[in-house]
Length: 563
Image (cartoon, rainbow, N blue to C red; front, top):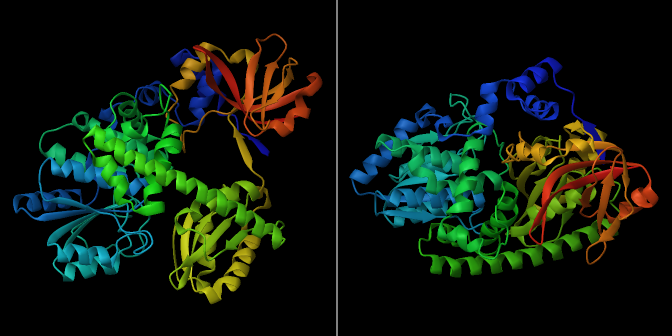
């Protein structure tokens, strides 16, 4: 691990904020590092309010979108709510369809089949709309690059409203309205909404026109918070408000579908991390293993008993997904070793029988193992399809762009992308991708990095300190969990490897003139020698609570330790 201590912020700003808020220097430092430098900014940060949400009509084309939906309702038109098959898309479809159904009975949903239609707006989906007399399609979490598809729909007399958050190409589709804060001609003040977030802004605009406030829309925010967590968008500005209130709904009064997913979870209060690792994978599993429609059905269900049945089915898909993911990951690791490719700067693997629905997860697993840009290919019809994942700091989307001569099509983001190519181009692409990464990557990026907010002593880790720290949540990009470093530590002699296979490390850290505190390092059992026999060591960690037999105590969640 590469430890990187963040630069110390301006001391004058830290002292000023420390005095204004009456907090210790570490808290003030963490705030200034996050761009929070005044009392008012801190108040907004610590006390998110629905009043902080931006006016939805600041988004370009919002007035056109609202007018077209109002016209469809007045004319009793059939409305098709269309969305991608992942968490962001299915939550957005559930949100939009359930809201519109409170105003209009002729609202239906459509999720493309991952294997038959692929990502985004499909011709099959438009033909479905034509055959079933739909005159308006609202596309969520997709559509910003569907130039030809939107034109095709228009030629058939079908209008489109697009709610997307992906970066547009050089041309904007000729839809009735294109809502995307990343449009260059859109002055909306916050650019980092997820697809479900853009859908929520449209719902907010419709509700606002009727005199309702965001408070009236609280029941929909469990969906928005789930999408924000799963889509890994920055949790600042508007996303922080939506995630904060959405988590509150999840923890107090979630919709039946989410309540059914959480039925067997014993945690009393879920965090955004729990949403990402408990709710997200189950919703995603429907689209990966069967069909995204199952996720929408669950999320839109109002009857709790029916929701429990849907949740059970989705849980089965998730168990199947986990088994498939494990099997393919093991096969991919074996392939890398057999081909003796451990010393490459990229990982590119292929098997025609691998399940297309889990290759993205496998790519993430391989990136964790070898920590380098990774592509996992499988057969998809007469082409090869791949999921790409990258390491922090390296733009895999740009790297794929440099290899475009070998690729049929590709799309995605800096750290995650997808592509298709002809089978005969696989070896040439594999070589070109390795060459491109070799030329453009900083070799330091191939060593996993831990970014440390600040160094502290153990005596700083007090219940009062942690109470304030908890209010920094919800965490995510742009507001990550605070990470600390402490030096000159010793284990009190009770350190040991724990877990069924002894792969985890548990220790009791001590420093002169401070209380002792338990630390747990998952997957760090191999570092036991560094702390044995009361050797001096330093640790990087975050702070959380451990609940055991009704007793709650602070503990260090170890990220890494060094001699």
